Length: 336
Image (cartoon, rainbow, N blue to C red; front, side, top):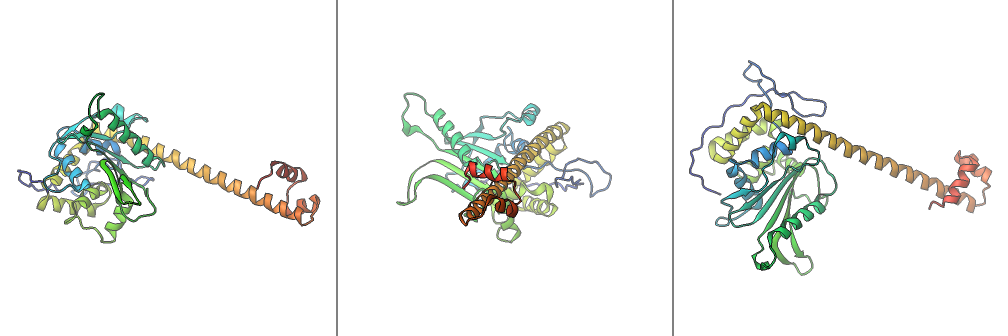
């Protein structure tokens, strides 16, 4: 664990009123004189809020701690410094539908790390991760330079959906690897996936303990805006043993109070919500088209079987409820 020469100060006692909308999120910040009802924290699963906390200048220590625990770097190989390479995070970026609010840094060893959080499953994350990683690698080596100078390129995807159905592991790491010989070609290209729903299920089942598991406490932070129990436990851990987590909680509270941040956050939330609804509509339409095609194929097979067994077209029409013209159309299209 990284050692920081700072005193651990108690995390503030935060009281919030969470107003739940129909899409089951807590949104409006509401002021109140009652001690247990004040305002909402921004949801860190929103990529704008995530980047503001983990990807802003001045918050390097928070990101360094997060990267070290995700990458499970041993003592002596841990990241000590990062340089942000894309700090764009204005309100214009938050409302731009095409913007990707990822975090790109260069470490003290010269490695490149890209971190992205994704709420909606667009069914393209593995291919997209490979594409972005390849772009970073291609920019790293200049013409005439030796390939030996190539540093690590690491992509970390935090996804709020189940990406891999063939494993219960919530954190997976991929490298260039021969699965038969069990030999790694190189570790200079890594792609990590952290599936938040799997993580949360395992935590609820008591398999993960944030007091002992540093990664668990940072992933729980992403869920804490909607769960008072999680937030209270993280506050205790921060006060007792984790100064960097305490710093993150303080800065999270501070940015949640900023009216400009809140406005940009709400714009981004609406855009992400509309995007998710759009993908859901596409899924539903695809399912309906599939059902319609399946029904049509079923009818075509039945018609074909009836003709093979000697039924007349009139008998087929009476049995299926289709007109003679519809039956002839099915025969012409030769659906099988």
